Amino acid sequence: MFKTVLTLFRGTVAVAEEELQDRTALVILDQQMRDAAAAVERSKRALALAIAQDQQEGRRLEATLARITDLEVRATAALDGGREDLAREAAQAIAGLEAERDAAKTARALFATEIARLKKHVAGAEARIAELDRGRRIARASEAVRNLRRGGIEAARPYECTLPEAEATLKRLRERQMEAQAADEALMELDAATGPITTAEKLAEQGFGPRIKTTADDVLTRLKAGRTAPAN
Image (cartoon, rainbow, N blue to C red; front, side, top):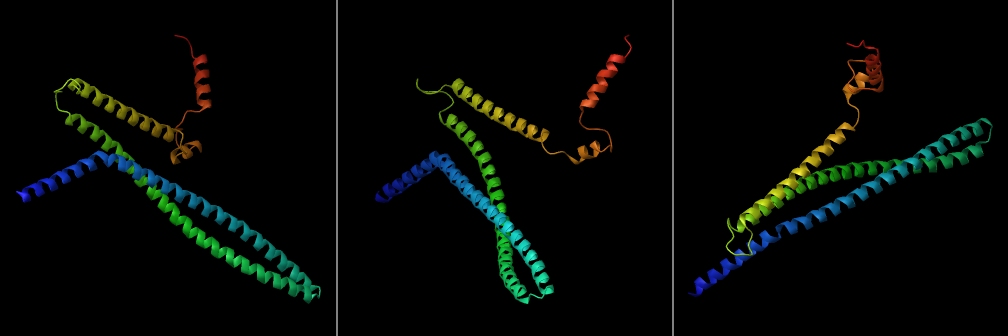
């Protein structure tokens, strides 16, 4: 008897745990995605900082190279003028600048490696988050449908949903999904319409093959032709 009670207790706990996980799975997923998105934003900030520092090192390197070139010219002129003392002073300055040049090159190489790594990480993380978001929408729809089915085909009590109400809820859910899908497709079409010029369009603009897009000249030519066309 005790063993039966213990088994029943363990079974009840397991069922309760599964039900809790089922009820909170979407909530947990939402929070996990928020945490992941925050981590991606931190990576983006780190990437922006690395790019800014790399650009700063680039400007420092350019300035150092310009100073080295200028001092080399002046040191050569000093040697030609018999002022070896000034040429030696310039040489010492050039040696120090060359050390700064080498340090700047090393720093830029390190930044280039880190920037490439961060770009790859951010792109991969954003793709995974987008995939998770699509899966979350599907899971929410599935959960809504499952909740409707859990209520039974027909309401047994006055305060329960009726079958027509459940059907109406599901219809609204599907309509919202269709609207969201239509909006996404419209946005993609808009992006494609306003996106960068294609290779075919570039060739057409240079006179290789027929034009792809109608221009203002095409419209004016068509209007003038309509005005001069004989009436039937």
